[in-house]
Length: 449
Image (cartoon, rainbow, N blue to C red):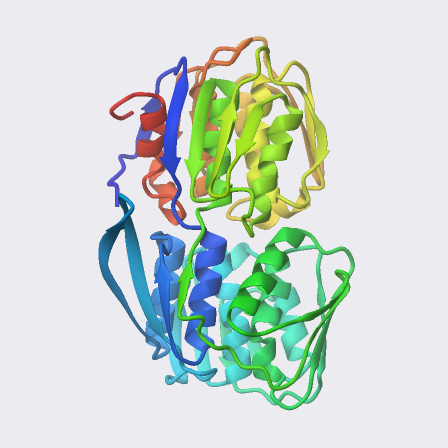
């Protein structure tokens, strides 16, 4: 992985153009890793994301006795592919005692917490300080209510956790849906382990946010041989007697959230910029980011495994949209809004506050450094572009998406030129896209930044 300095200075970029091969999806990668571990048989995973978040999941699985190996990359059609082989444990981890460090990976700690609670043992699970500020109470409450034995060893509602063997006595679970869809994902993924003798029904309390991420979960569960009966977004029933079976080989799509930065770059500074690894048939909801760019006037074309973006003939258009369905990719729109012809409003993004940092507050703070006028609400952000952008030193809050989003402020748009941007702590991109700045330099036709 790239060895980054303490900060990275980006000079203004007049035009971007090129092709970017995306790293694997974080959301898909960590789901597949856990499903492969819980399945019967060996799973060959192609193009697993290499990042901090997948590294902590792999390390945790090894501590639990799951055998996996990484093979040397092989070239297929000119592209180097990574291969991981995971030997499934058929729903029962060999090691029933472990102390697991999960970094700041929500996609790892939440499903794994549910799996450990259902399988049983004596487990401690914790992460970096920010992880201990990210809520997990709704998931823990849902599991403890049906017989799990999970205790908080720090602040109630948050990691770290101590998980003991429980005694499950009911086939009906309930979980809130308005804080994080990862809580429902965690329950869905472990539900077959609970539904050995009778069906399990999971009811969602309140509005379910980030529904496309639940669609990813259900899609991957089907790939591993488990079907879920769905009653809208209010309840999910898992028939009894299903077990995860390895699909043999499974490929990890390119990360649609990571694609957003390059699609936005093409929409701002000319293009065409093409991302490869994700396309019109993607199982990821974040491909809908392309539709948001189209509403801003960008020219978008899609293939089976690629998306291409070009700038409109004039400035980007201001928008007022609900982004509940794509909260991560919506951050990119907040920076693209600097190049719009008027104020833009991003709505229904309260989930930003419980991510790697309080992203609503962080985005507002850093956008103001560039000269924008920003109105921050409980669940919305209104961005009024400045007459001209001001050079800025951007703090990233140990949040990979902050670093990647604000690189776009160095681009020249149709009516607003980019500016000099210093990105503090650029190494935080290692969470999902360690080579991000090299890829960004490539479309800017520069050797490096």
